[in-house]
Length: 424
Ligand SMILES: C[S@@+](CC[C@H](N)C(=O)[O-])C[C@H]1O[C@@H](n2cnc3c(N)ncnc32)[C@H](O)[C@@H]1O
Image (cartoon, rainbow, N blue to C red):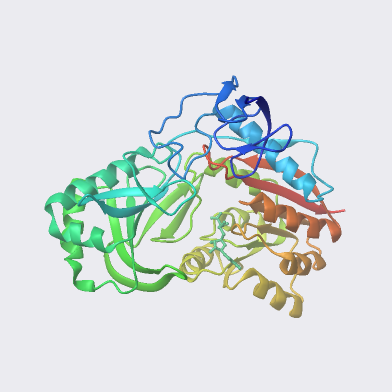
């Protein structure tokens, strides 16, 4: 006979562990009682709610739509604290504050797979925990405009042979909208061997633009399955980027370049990272197109912004140039920049670190700590690599003075953390 078991501990990745640690289940909530055999929920949590998306649980994108949004953010905070403590971080602040936003419609960028299903072109994501194609009819976490445009593309491809040929050639289509939701960039990600004579890109784009005037630019680029974008551009049409406003600042984001995806939280997020920082020299490492650099340039005499991706580094160089001669952009990896700065005895008073999921790494953290900046603001999108780097900074004399969980990715297990460190 089957028995029941209480689920107690939310884990990073979306699962919840049972009280006896024997069971880990997705799509159940803390304090729910489940049948240990069938995993059916016997006693539901008060935090249970109705998912908005018809693809929820099949799609690999979201993990938490069955949970009330306030409870999601609370659980992320406890997951974060647990991960940090388990990793041996000693200076986790007593309070981790939460900055939460809108639960749905928040993404300014979506990347859809494109494939034929029963002869019909469809957009989709991966089936959960697989690379199998899941055709979709909606994506409620995206800005509604983006899915409308995706549907328009499919409609056009029914009668426009150029559009059908290009969508057939592409593996994925990325759509990126500005803050006002009135301009969209489109990128077709195609295999490197795509033949350029698929169909007329310009004819396709003229038809798309007529039906969806928000699309102001598009490109077809080569993406290798193993190494990512190769740098080859097959075709381009219209503007090659977008202006994006955050607070008082305007950023230029080239098509395909990195920009934070949560269109609601960006102004508060930038404020959280930069507020109260001032002085002579600041470094913005992993700078992207300069989201933080532009604001730092108002309160520091010199800002050096470092970015490794050639595309973003170009946008960053243009931004820094406009800010004045005293500020500069460096196209390099953070590690190479720090090695050179050490040799040349360059130092900063304040350093902002915003690495991709791989984190900053032990070598770069050690080098940086040896340069003794007064304050380090670490912006992390992966708590496991944050924990590793936090330990290194701690060992080298840094103490966390505040930590915020910024919920840039509602309905998913992803979380952003902003930690401020000072020298002990
Ligand atoms: C999480 S994004 C942050 C960008 C920017 N701070 C923002 O918020 O818009 C990380 C950035 O680091 C860049 N990057 C990745 N690896 C890097 C490295 N080793 N050194 C410097 N930049 C790197 C990526 O191209 C990306 O622009």
